[in-house]
Length: 440
Ligand code: ASP
Picture 1 (cartoon, rainbow, N blue to C red):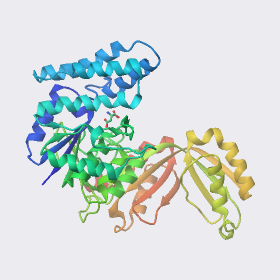
Picture 2: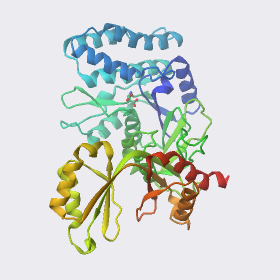
Picture 3: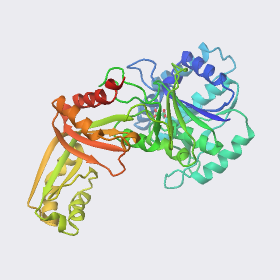
């Protein structure tokens, strides 16, 4: 049995958190490869080391004095080292090198990556295991895309040489050996890449919450947790704003059947959430989760006999494409079709889009509605449960929420509901109550 364990920034924010991490790793001999993030926030209002590094880079590249910033970053690591009494560990040389780099030709990704690099060095020393520089085992191509083949080969070889190791998250190297990072939160991706290369049985992703919840705890008081979720359900929910794991982190492990287990460093006995390809396990409730976002616009296009006009939809979509706007949803009726777009992307180009639709598709009328929120009700159990949609709509009617739009894909994995922005929270609570609270 082999487990890859990734710890997020808040799990490694200070010495106290390092102690918890060590206990977790040592509690299970299968936890052999460890992927750390950079130290995150210790309290609300604190600044993540990665953000401090970006700041430092900005100063250096503008020619301003960055030394104070660098001293503050160093003190984050030094206090961890001191409190853990790691007497043999010093980051003096590393900081000299970073300072030298900032003085000569500062490179953004290199600087950002030092947060994980340094944390990896400290963690490896604390755990007494090997350190593998991610630059030696994670590779990008010339065009910046991730080079899976080269990475797999190098990673496998290197891992076969060591039984236990720390591999810092978030970065790898380019063909010219310069450093490149993934997008923010990218240590999740590194963990997944290591899990895939090592053919791990589980990818444990340790964070500061006990997995996913059925609804956003800022909207619903104390929501139920999600025990098991499929990759597809997760895609739907995270697209709609539920964020615990980086979107791209599922791809390396998804096709080879390695489950991801989201766990809480501060409550290690909690089982957390299992993310799996497919499962026979029922999710406890008919729905798996509810998520949503505000700030959409609906563009309603009407044309008599539109349904029999071949190419009408394509012409309408072309108007959006010409203006560089991607659409989110497209519910349609007999003589109407609605294109739902992000308000902030759309607003400045709306008149250009409207005239393009007129020019290309010659509709009878176009109407724009703003301040729309979309809510996704997601669940693999909905397919086999009769009356799900009915329950949602009667709950919303009860809560006096006016439904503006409905869109259900034929996969029956989710139902998307459009409501007015101001009804957003109420609608989510009403749906949660009908499926979860009344089932308890
Ligand atoms: N430290 C990086 C960030 O803050 C990457 C990560 O934490 O996953 O985005």
